[in-house]
Image (cartoon, rainbow, N blue to C red; front, side):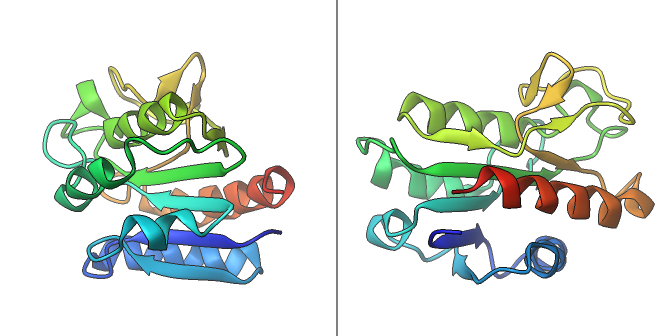
Length: 167
């Protein structure tokens, strides 16, 4: 697997727990990058990307992603592969469950980046999501508020998919 970075806020305890599991299941050398302080140069040195994008409030990106994305908005991401995961609350916010994943996916695709790691919507109960395409999410949707017992299994299955899809 080519140079892979996993990008998340080091201040997010729940996300850090998920990152630890993803890294363990990947069994590969993955570099952790703090999304709160990274630069465009830090970001662009990778070929494979795992982006932690929890959904904030009623369907928004976390502040650190909102603040960072302008630094790479003019970049062509062709030849780079992106896997996105994030948490959401399908009972508390059923009309915009894991929208953050979908917002990030749109940003990446508009810059020619390749999305990998799509997962099934089966087993979730929500009304709508911009992360949904047909019967799949454009990444890994996690709901540790309502389906914590399914998290490890979902992460392990996703990691196996990434091993095949990352170059």
